[in-house]
Image (tube, rainbow, N blue to C red):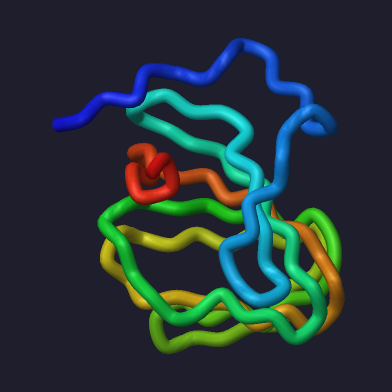
Length: 115
């Protein structure tokens, strides 16, 4: 198993660079160790987080905007203040209905994001 160590104790968001990860989608990896990771994800209206699955557990908080979120066979329209949980290996994705920001928390760390 590859280990990535841990992020600094204090991460200043304004000092972090955004990484473009899709059309209208960018992210900042804010904090992590080998067991947990927090990521800010910025979406523009109409951008898509494609349906996918992974072995990590995920909890996502909707900071702003509106998102049509699918987890398994259920789809809901979520807005600022809402949250969703994704069990490992469950298909999920999102379509941004209004510019917004999500905060994703993964356990364990998303190794693929570190490359």
